[in-house]
Length: 315
Image 1 (cartoon, rainbow, N blue to C red):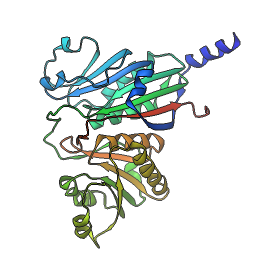
Image 2 (image 1 turned 120 degrees about the vertical axis):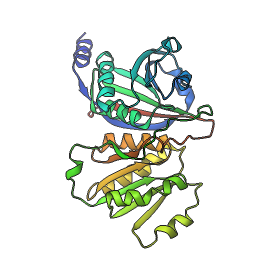
Image 3 (image 1 turned 180 degrees about the vertical axis):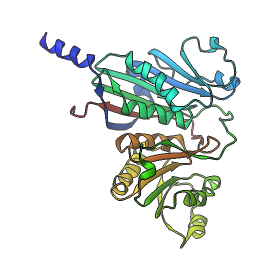
Image 4 (image 1 turned 180 degrees about the horizontal axis):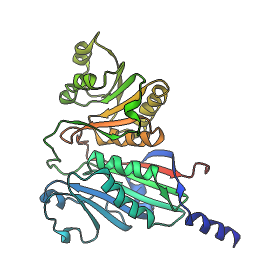
């Protein structure tokens, strides 16, 4: 009886969560879990919003974020709790909706599936930031971030190439330390942005994360003797590998530098960047408008990244 009373008292108070574990897991593991909430998003024109998740696992609640400036036919989403936003919705609007969700769950271990296949990067960034920074009525929060190779469709695009922060700490403008710029590239289009980023941030050094399949010979010649550029090869489908490489680099650099990460490629790299920001809030994540950085992993596979957030004193 005393043990039960203690657990009830814990659940009645908000508890600050810390990211304590990440792991890439097989898709089949979702079939064995009791999922409390499934979250997904659709973006763009009405016809694109007929696309539904590849991860329609059984869940007590299914929430869909609709980012659309047109009228939506709600009957298409009858099994979901629909949260409507304009395509220009602010972070505060998304946080407000998520906060309502946060306050409505009481359990020792809450389990969430976030399908980010069709989710704009800035929305994914808001969700990761919210889950890591806000209080929950639970002892442990388990989040499965899921991505699948979607049907052959036209992804969201905006007529903007402006660079904007997704996740930054409040005083980043006053940080006078030298800048270390970490850029993920995946094709010639994104390579062409390096000089623009260099003129924006004036970094002392640049670290390029480059997929293994890209030939970097021309890139090395182009920037030789202009600035210190270090290349890091990575596999876009290996999330734990990306996490290890990027996390260790950020941990080393942030001691003496202002660290800026600009993902210009896959959403998997962006997800890892957001999770690292949850551990090191002073590591900034920036991106261009969504006309860049929406590259699809054309493999036909499903990718599940399990993240556990818990009270920092728990094992």
